[in-house]
Image 1 (tube, rainbow, N blue to C red):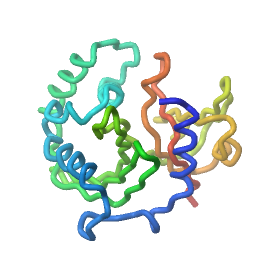
Image 2: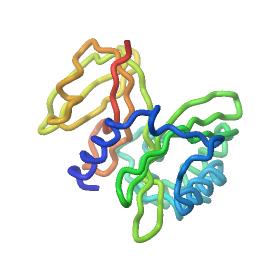
Image 3: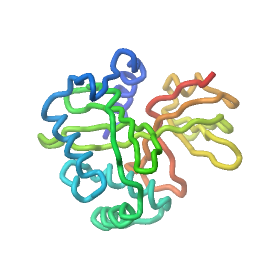
Length: 219
């Protein structure tokens, strides 16, 4: 996806609030049928990764693979990545339930959903999914994960600003565009809630990093 397009989408997302756009499955969210069917298929086959291949972009598979493998130098084919994820899922927790608590139509061919997931051991977490329309079909394109922590480092690299968030024991790297509001708003020492997706479309680097989608200060 072009950077300028993502920047305009992120601007819309930052202006949105969960109070206005949040919806739950129980309340009957207004999601177009063609998109709802894709969402239902995705979660129906959640525990069998290959079952959702037709509704996943290559980018989505790369994100899940590198989040699982944690080795940015591993250059397998998409098919090999898919098989690796499938084999790992056999030993993972089963998805018990899910609730859509946010829906946002960002453009004609892009939408975003927020999903709270519960697994077989009772663990719950929340993620965002970007769903895009490619060649007339809706597919899952990004998975956006949340991370809380303290900004322990901030730096500029080319036209981007990096935030290292966490603590000395464990931290994640997030990048955003240098002209974004986030780049000038948040400073070292701030406690923040980050939402971002693993960057896999740019040139492979020696370190995995996340692209900022939303960023908020935690008081």
